[in-house]
Image (tube, rainbow, N blue to C red; front, side, top):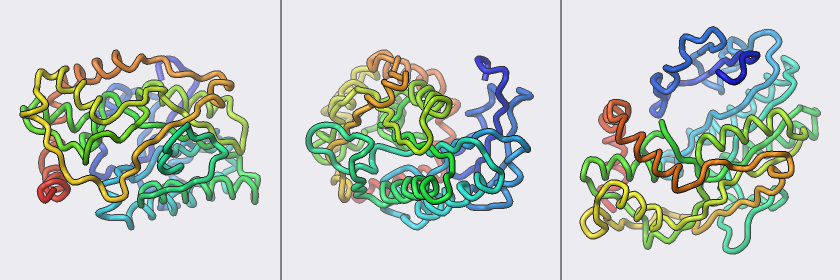
Length: 314
């Protein structure tokens, strides 16, 4: 917000388990920032959040963790599909100029070779990926049917500060800082493309401002790594050893082996990632090391119950 004094932002959030008011403490007192507590599935909450003259809606809201979608798929359908529908209706009702759907590389499914382009068919293989693909298809259908001014970004695996510690990097970092083991799925050779959160945010903003309506843009980090490689990097960064701190667990059901995005379309639009992966990963580990007061309260209560449910029998 410091870089855009002309912009006012309203955040609508249902404040579910992964929400944390500390994440926005730096801007909470800024007069250009406004918070509304509400669910995107609730049309009344959407109307309250949309101030007169709202120019754009960016839909970051989603149930996101694949493991949780396997345990509780219904909530993913509600938020990712129904919630998207409610927002699209609000765009039509209020004549909002631009709507951007934040999506994921997982909608393309497993990619054995090469990289996914925006015109590739969607082949989701998990309840999470299917719910996100369902939202994407609604967005594109509204553009075709109603001329709704929509855009879609599909990002690769995002990492960085303030990430809820159920995802691989923050989970492994915080476990290792506590001298605990980390759960590596199967042989750990699943491949993901990693994208720093700052680059992802810049990519979304760039597409929002410069993208062609009705188009999809892949936002890829260009940093493909096996999960074993990431694990090794984090062990080194925290001074731990593979033999004592890695626990191989039964692989996730239907686990996609590899994702890879072709982000050349976004590059032609003028966006490329800026954060070099080794620096970004080092800075992320350092952030969690210095901000125990942020993540320690999270890794108790609901998180502990989830962690036991997810990993105890594996």
